[in-house]
Length: 475
Image (cartoon, rainbow, N blue to C red; front, top):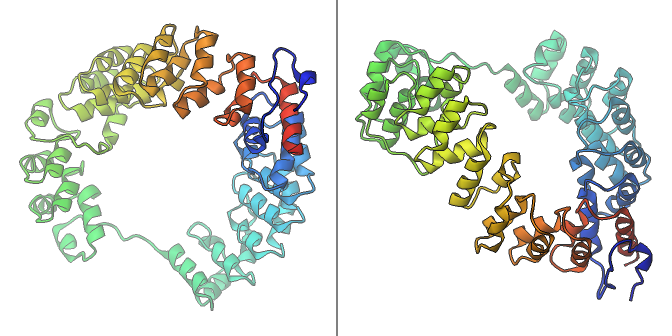
């Protein structure tokens, strides 16, 4: 029996009836946004002992005290975990790049691809005794040209190959390029070939297309080349439906030739024709297309009209549901367009508006979610929350009980009941809700179901966080 009375400021915590779920507690505390530096510093030792090493990189904020402790930690796993954190200062990253453990230096060198390091640090990395560290140096931000040249002549073929790329080849002296072309290692020679590869222009004439033997380049030509008319006439009669479909989507294919494919026997070809930007609504509606069950095709031409309110309103009135869906998926829309699409008869259009448009109203988010029982991203959006959602706490559908947590007026007793919900997703979300009564939260810390979610609850008092660490360490 454990006496926790010294750590019970506002509630009674039952004695633990079995071994403490220490690993789950530590995982929860590492994710707890309210965990102070003193807790996080102690969690660094868990990384050293083989625990989760990703949390320092995942936390949005990491106090300076924790960064300093990780930087000076005696175990290399902790220092390597710190090196994985995005956005480290050049000073901290430079210190990690000079670490005595090669695995820390490797991680720091990879991070230096986006964080510029002092030149002296780059010089040291380029001369590092570990070839796996040196091979990461060519990608470092702000690498001086003389260091690139040195790495291109490195004794390790891994490093020489890494120094050769399309954007670095021209920086190398002629004598170095000559040596790399004749390098004894096939990986280096392959890197040279990749660096020198230049795509030939796609054919745009009928003669050039007929002479082209590569089927991939033929399809790329049909899909995007500036086709001469004779070639366009040839492509719309091709026996291969993939070629006809590619041509149907080529915005540079004349409209009259594209309309020749409107009655194509292949459904994918007809759908592609129906989604062209140059068709009138009358022409579009005349195509016998079928909306696929799979993910809809991208319509970049709709996004190109994002700054034209009148054009967006016209497209939002299109008879084609995939055109309306593409409009609904834009991040910003005029109010009139939002109001129109929010009443669209197609659930997929309303769903796209709810998921992607920042201007989607909360009423739409809730109605779409209730109709489709998802997606789970919608309740996290700020406009979704509203009084009255607590009524869903009694529904048999777990998705609706989960959404009930977004009621700002949810009663504590309802929240406590949801924390013991038979659905794991609902119970885990409720266990992490800071409105959960403290006695219910403490009970969850001992329960088998979701101790990590309870430990991640930002309402957990710091005294209890520290006691959890004590119990986990003494187990």
